[in-house]
Length: 328
Image 1 (cartoon, rainbow, N blue to C red):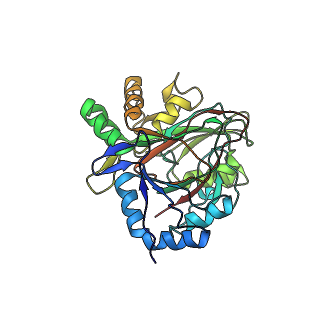
Image 2: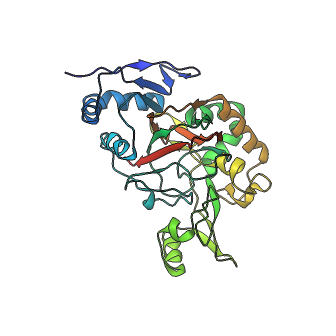
Image 3: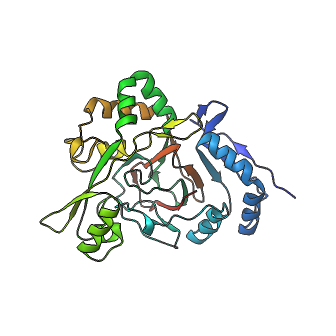
C-alpha cells in the first residue's frame, strides 16, 4: 500500500508563489525501517521531485536514518548519478565516511561558512546536495538556505545595471591551495588533494586542461585563477539564479573583504564594486531560512535554486552534518 506524504509547517518558512521554502515532510510513523524508506521514496519520487523543483529544498524529518551508512542508502534511493568529493575541485577539507558520504565542512565551530552554491567557484559542480544531521549542536549550527532566484529577481529590481553586469561578464575566482592539508582552515585542502595529483607537473597539466591560470608560491602553495564562470544561470524555465560564491568569498575568505579583487573579479578582470557585494549580501538575508537541525534530519537541496552555509555553534556536543552530492 502506497504511503502518503505528510507535509508540515515550521516557523519562518518563506512563501514562494504556490510553494514554501523549504518544504518539510515528516514521517507519520508509517515508515519504520530503511527498506520501507527506499520503497516510500520510489513510490513518491515524481511528487518529491516536483516539490523540490517548486521549493528548492526539502527537509525530511523523523525517518529511520541514523548513520552515514543509512544516509547513504536513503540518498541513493533517489537514483541520482553520484558526484563524489574526490571528483570535485573544492579546496575545503572534508572527511569521507563512505564513497559517497563525507563531512559538510571541517572548519572550527566558531567559524561561519557564508552562503554559497556548492562548488560554483569551480568549473564542475553538483546539481543536488543531500545533508544529514547525525548530531545537532547544543547551540547554533543552523544551515542557512537562500533562494537564489528570488535574490536575483530582487537585485534586478533594485540595481538592474549591477544585475546585468553580473549576468553578462561572469566571474573569475582566485584561490590559494596550501602545500599540505590544513585542518584548521575552512579552505585547507592542499593542491595535491584538490586536484587529485601527485606532482607539480600533473597539477599544471590538469589546470591547463581546465583553462586555469596559476602561480607557484615560494612556500610551495599554489595560487590558481579560474576561467570565466557564470555569476547568473538561466535554468531554461524563465528562472534566473544568482549562481556563484560571491557572498562566501567576500564575507568569509581570508583577506577578501579588505581586498575583494584578490579573490573575485568580473570575468573581464575588472573590479566588482564593494557596494554591489554589500547589496547582494544584504538582499540575501531577505530570502534566507535558517534550518535548525534535529538528529536524524535529512535535507535535499537543489544546488542551482538554493545557496547554503553554516552558522557557528557552541556547546560540548559535536555538530555532525554529513553530505552526499549528485549530478543530474
